[in-house]
Length: 279
Image 1 (spheres, rainbow, N blue to C red):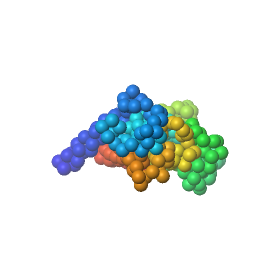
Image 2 (image 1 turned 60 degrees about the vertical axis):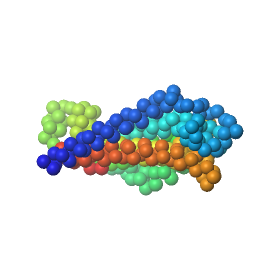
Image 3 (image 1 turned 90 degrees about the vertical axis):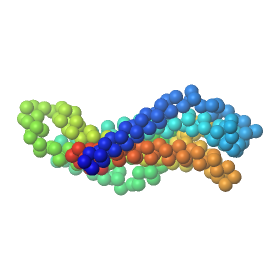
C-alpha cells in the first residue's frame, strides 16, 4: 500500500513538473508578445531603476526593462539548449550504438576518440572552440555540440552492449537485418528511456553552459537579451542594484531546478516499474 502511494505521488509530481515545463516552453514561445516593454529600448532616465509598479523587476544600467529582457531571453536560453541536446544526443547515441554493433577496430577507434574528448574539461574546451570560431550565440552552440556528445556515446554503447546478445537481436541478424535496421528497430526503442533521462538532466547543464559562455562574452552578443549576458552586463552594479543580476539568476535557477526534478522523477518512475535507468 505504501509503495502504491509513493508511486502515485511520483506520478503526480511528474505531471506537475511536466506542466511546469510546458509553461516554460510557452513563455519561451510567446514571451515577446507578453513582455510589458521593449527589451531593447535604451532610456538612461531609467538607469538602474528599482522594481516598482511600472517595471516589476526594475531596469538595467541602460534603462531597459529586466522583466521584458528575461521573457525575450527565455527563447534564446531554452530553445538553444533543446537544439544542442537534439544534436549531441543523436550524434553521440549513433556513435555509441555503431561502436557496440560493429565491435572490433571500429569500436576501438570510436571509443578512443571519445576518450580523447573526455580528457578535456567540457566547458574549458567549449571556451577554446568558441574563442576560435568567434563570438555569437550560434558559435557558442556549435562549441557545446562539439564537446558534449561523449556522455551519450558512452551510455548508448554500454546499453547496446547489454542487449547485443539478446535472442531477438540474434534472430534479427540471422534474418538478414542490417546495422541500420538493428539500430532503429531493436536497439534504440529499448534504450530510448535512459537516453531521454540523460537528455532531460542535460538541459539544465547546457543552459548554464550557454549562460556561462555569454557571461564571458563568448556566446550571445549585444543587444541580444540572454540571461548570462544580462548578468555579465550588470555584475559591476551588484552592490548598488542587485536586482539587475538577481532576477536573471532566478530565471536560470527556476529552469534548471524544474528540468532536474523532472528528470529525477521520471527516473524514479522507471525504477519503480522495473526499468533500471543507468545514468
